[in-house]
Image (cartoon, rainbow, N blue to C red; front, top):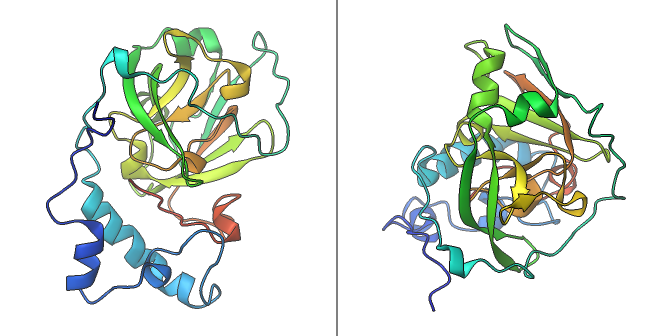
Length: 240
């Protein structure tokens, strides 16, 4: 059984870097936990990182999905940043703010009333494991559209109830398979996996898929704080 159905571009990331003279992923793509010359090279290479990876990603192209019988219910490992937060779902509000014309404060009832999208994709962790999971929820692009972002928005910050934070580029955030998920394998999302709301997407590594999301902020510029793991040297773009 072939577990990986994701079709890569004919020009692989490694080959692209080689022929472009940008070989050495520890320089261009950052690496995991060991930033090279982080104060200088990181700042210089990050705009190039983003452009190169966005080029390879083709940010609006759907990723081929898996069949229902390929779901791996036990393979999704539960990773916790600090602790599993206690969230009163009756009082929960998703805040959407920043450089927008229509700031939002959405209840779960309002979120669940939006069109439901379901997808079966491969969740890939930077630690080396993966799991095929069915996620269901609302497309992030629908939430962003409701907030009416200003024309100069380029990035999206995600804040979680446990203090975790991360940021994405706007193109990846608007990918048709980037979800704010509240279902897992056809059932309500378990708290351990990020309920009431988490990111799920086939185009980013697992540490970019924040759990227990409480606030989404759209901005034109990133601050010096770009994400919990990213600020410790993990690759910022983290595209698949």
